[in-house]
Length: 62
Image (cartoon, rainbow, N blue to C red; front, side, top):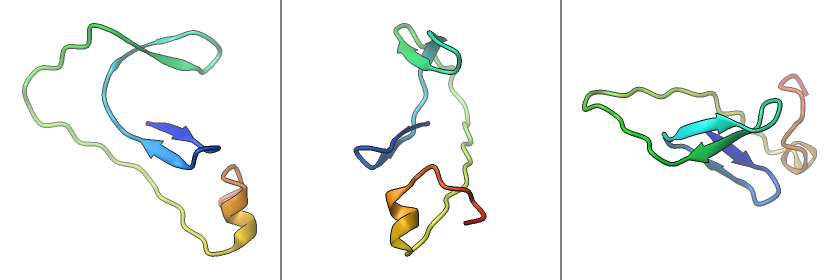
């Protein structure tokens, strides 16, 4: 899962990755996935307050 806040999109997918910095994952070539079921779950926060929409890093309690 990759959130691009400045361009306002969230990308979901599976890939091989490597860590280049502290928590910066970078896609790598050569991913192989066996046949079978994959489940993905995540939380989605929504708001209609303009201050929340302008700040995607806000606290969930705001």
